[in-house]
Length: 267
Length: 280
Image (cartoon, rainbow over all chains, first blue to last red; front, side):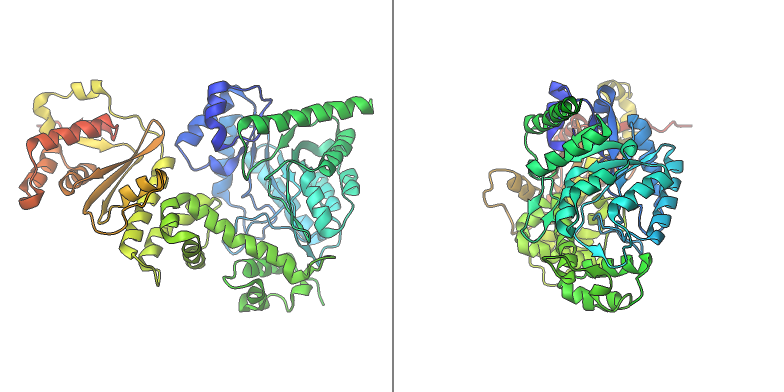
C-alpha cells in the first residue's frame, strides 16, 4: 500500500496487516517533523520501498547530486527494498515543472538515459527501478515504441521495471497502440513491481489521476502481465480523493486475491 | 524537416508548458520558436487531438499543479483572496520565482515577499502578514526535532543565576512581528467558517512552534513579543527583561506578566536549553 498522510493515525494505532508500504520519497527528504517520525515507526514494522518523482532521469540537465545524496540517506534509514522513479524528465535549464514529462524514444535518448541510470545506481549503491509513464503526447522524432525503449533500457542499464498497468492502458488509448502487445514486450524477469490505479476519461484522451477504482480492462491487463511474470509485488495507487484506509486496503487485498486466482488458473 | 534532438525537444516543451498565456501563446513564444519552427515538428497529432491540443494538456496542468502546491502551504491566504484571485497571484509568482528545487515544498519560499509587491493586490499589508505566518507554519512543520527544556533542567539552575541565564529556543520555532490580526484569521478559517477578522490593525507578534509534532501558534502583545525576541536573539534574561521594563507608556508591563509569560513559554516547550555564563 501507499503510505499516505491521511492514514498515519490509523496505521500507527491499528498496525494493520499490510505486506509492505510504498513511500513517496520527496515527502520525507526535507523534513524532521511528524512525517519522518511516522515513517521511522512504519519502517520499523513493515518493509518499505521508495518511489520518487524528481529523479528526472531523462533530462539533459545534470543529475541533482544533492537530491541523490538525500535519497540515498533515506533509503538507508528506511532499509528500502528498492528505489523507483519514472522514465521521464521533469525540467531543464535548472527549472522543475514537477510533471512526469515523456521522452522522445530515440537512440540518442536511449544512450543518454542508459548512462544516467548507471550513474544513479552507482550513487545509490542499489539497482534503480523505473516506471513506465502515462503520456499525452508522442514525439515526431521517436523511432521506436515505448515498450522497446523500456525493454532495451532495462537490459542495457541493468535496472528493474515498475510496470504501471494503468499507465499502459492510458497511453495505449491516448496514442492508439495495442496495450496487450506492450505488456507482452516487457522483459518478465525485469519486472519487480506493479502499479494499479484509476484514471479520468475525457473522451478525447485519458488522464492518469489515481483518483478512483481501476477499470476492468486494467485488471485484465494485470492478469495478462501476471501470467508472464508470476507473483510480483503490486501496489494500488490512490492519490486524489484518497478514501479511508479500509477502502484502499480492500483494493490492495483485491489485487493480491486476483493475482492468486490468475496464477492458479494458469497452473 | 530534421528530427529535433533531445535537448531541443525538452527546451521547447518546457517553454510551451510554463508560458503564462494560452498554449498557442506558448507555441508562438520566442523561447519556443527559437527551438523549432512548428508544433508538428515536435509532436504528432492523435486520432482525436491536434498536436497543440496534446501539448495543451501539459500546459493546462502546470498552473493547476503550482496552485495546488501553494494552496497547501497558504490555505488561509487562498481563502482570503478566493480561488481566482489566488490563481492570478500564483500565475505571476511562478513566472518570477519558478521552482528550481526537486521538491514543491520549496516553491513558496519567496511567496511572502512577492505578496508584498504584487501589483493590484488589495489589503496588501494583511495579505503579507498572513503569508509570512503561513510560511512560518510550514517551516516549523518540517524543522528538525529538538527536545524541549525539562523541569529537571530548570530546577538545576540556581535562583541567583537566572538573571545571567540565556534561554535557547527549539529549532521548530519562528517569531514574527505582525501588524494585523492574522493569527485570528487562521483560527477562523480552520474553525466553523464564520467571517474572520480582516480589517484593522493589531500590533504585536505571533510565536509559531511545534509541540508533540503539531504546529502551535501564540499571539503575543508588543512587550511579550519584544521580550521573546530579545531572548531568541541571545540576550540574557536580565538583559531582555531590562529592555522591556525600560519601555514606558502603554508598553509598561508588570512583574506578574513577566512570570506568566515565562511559565507559559516553558510549558509550551518553546525552549530547548538554558545556559549560564560562568563568571571569573
